[in-house]
Length: 233
Image (cartoon, rainbow, N blue to C red; front, side, top):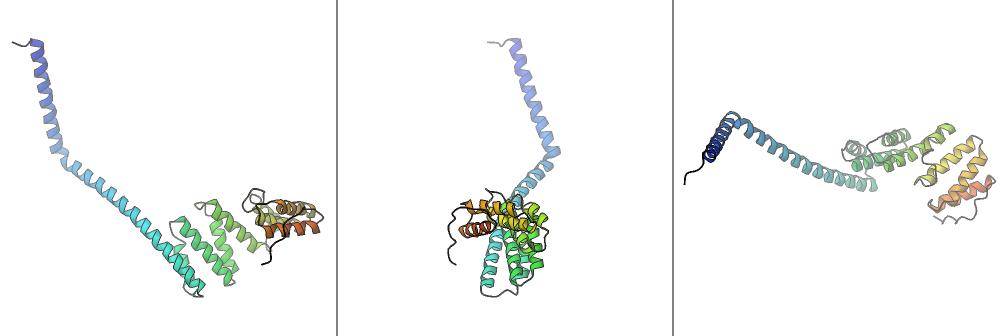
């Protein structure tokens, strides 16, 4: 049975459209085929490079951790001659934990060698490194301030440690003690005594620090209450 004219026209137009698209695709492939292939190759190369870089970074990190471990072993055995150079190299690591560990160790080694100037500079570097977690930076600030305690103006020390010398801060014991001692230097004995009393009553602070704070608060005329006696070393 013959098809209606409209159906024939639709079938013809569809076949023409399909042939036209096929010809366009063939012509496009001829004109741009090399570019397409090149693009795919570049994409695969980029993916491969990224995967290689990730594996390289992991391997490098593992190697650096092993190097740190060997440095600690050497220092423990009294072999410190090459440690500064090795630690300085690791201090440039892209891995935050490796970099921070190397810097802290370098500062500790400097203290052991009575080079307080280098130790202070190293702690200051850690404290000022915004890419490191706050725990590293705060610990470095506490140690830097402890080394600089005698040379800092009391008001500067109080201002520096103000964010850490508060109940609830993990550094309240250390920062609070130094702040209170700075307040005594300023003649603010009552304020210092109250701060020592607060430290003595804070159960999150280590017992030796609480006992010491209670004793000092008492000498300043502030009753800090009953605080456990620090154990004998």
